[in-house]
Image (cartoon, rainbow over all chains, first blue to last red; front, side):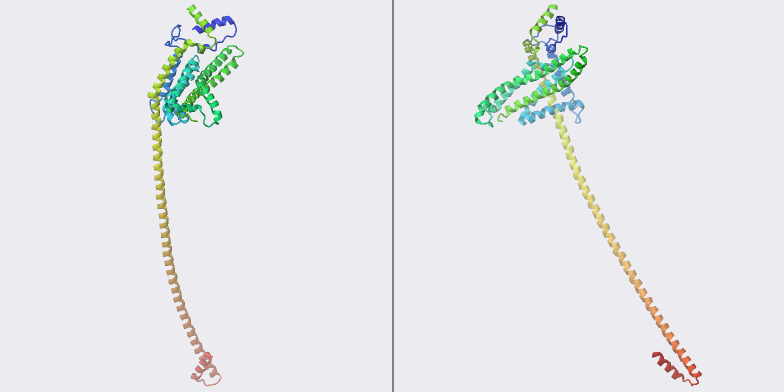
Length: 256
Length: 177
């Protein structure tokens, strides 16, 4: 409501072509116009809740028959399970399999939020750095804790590349330490940035569609970018999950 | 209402472009994110993943059993084929034995028949020779008789006195000669 009013105001101010590609990311309370307190149900809450519903439909309801010969929905659930399970097993090894539910949680949340966010008028929780940063920090902290818990101080070996020449090792160690602490930043910004950029670009083209002469190009471009965004929605979830696996592998087997 | 809208518009204008960097919404998002992730984790860990894992394991078991059963059947089929081939070979050998026996039997019969025929032919030939010898003997006798008579007549015509014994002896003498 407030953003519409703002849009109208801007339209009056500027008179010409008006678009607000970032308005779609504004956090709004679901009920009323009040301030956003930490407990207020907002559009972010709604779309996170919808992703929970999607996950329950996809993974719980579809498998309720436990059929040996699966239905379509059940095969999707099995496919998702097998995909993430194999990824965890391949990257982290057998001893990483017990972390599979956590990685599955992250992957399913991100993939559902990304795809639901592609619906028209939807809100994409994963386009917010607050959301992705919390997930990335959770991964970073748990991986670090697991690393020290499993290997003690031997976990520091992840920074000490024993295959490199001795003279280079301190420099490499410095680089490794920096890259280790940059991990959560890149991990979170990669996802949020991709989602935000795609949605913003679509919104910009949508605004161009209002101009008669440009509208055919704009509509074709929106279709093309929408298809690209479908790909990005999946790939970014996959990248987030597989990087989590890679970090976990470093924690479980710190020696290169 | 109008003032509120205006305030909101100003707030948006103050946060230039990026609602992502509006830190006032962070506690809200983080709270709801944690709630969401905990719910998803519980749903997955308690219900979905064990169920899907069980389904996959059950299917794997079924497939393994089916493959084992198929292996058994295959072994049985190979055995059956061996037995069939054995029976076929036995039957063929038996047929060959029977054929050889029959051939030998026929050969024996044939030999017997040939021997018998040879014997018969030999007997007939001997008989014929005998008959021919008899005929020849009787012919010689007749020739001797005719020669004797003729000689006697010739002697008589020539004016001699035919001594029957002398003529017969002379003819016999000539005939030997």
